[in-house]
Length: 329
Figure (cartoon, rainbow, N blue to C red):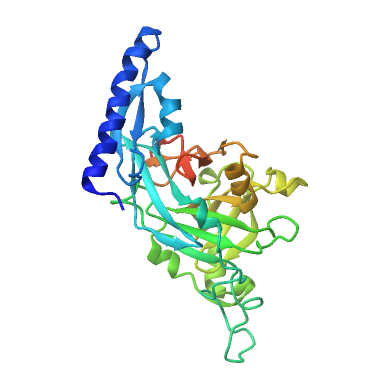
């Protein structure tokens, strides 16, 4: 437990160290200042927006839980494994810098091992019970509330943990996470029903999920391959992605669709990829994804997704970044 006096001491010590840095940086001719979220050692929940000499930042990130860029605003924590998940946003003067999900390395331990959490099932054989393997959608879902009003047009987040992966076999049948960033209200998503049609879907809702999105609102190369799920909708897959062309699955991008509209953005990431970043075998990565020609709703939209492991904070970050304002048309 950190006492109030102890916290003041840590903040003071950090401030004294940083006060000496500008003179050193200026003397070397490196006086460029960059935005940093200053977090004192021993007080990881205390975050201070700061502008510091660029030359000072690497040492700061090694010795404190600070991180580069503006400070985040966080939503409520949701339990995952031996850790938690939190949605967050980062902004500068009202412009989004990042929207994402953050979780400690401990969240990858103690994860559920059952193929399904049993939330979305349909008793197909009418025997009064549902089989997790044959009558339920796979995976475990965790709904996240973003801080404040979120970052329009994105209104809430959903993380799915898939212990055995899912179809298609030989492609996505490895343990992985689905990070969904929803444009569709949660109430509308929750109304997509289970039933007797394909993928345990209500037949009417299945037809609505397969309703084509107008071409102008669909990014080139993303196709309807009948990856439909209840309480979710359709998944438009990138036909150019490595895993659909004989390569391995590590991470990929998906657009979600329902009733002829794009309803969520999704980064799907293998658990092994996250573990590789934690162990230093895989570098932090940002991947651009193809954009549609038009958007139904004006707002800030991302152009890339990123996966990062912050060694100084022992935490993973999966985020949407590179936001550009788009006018509805």
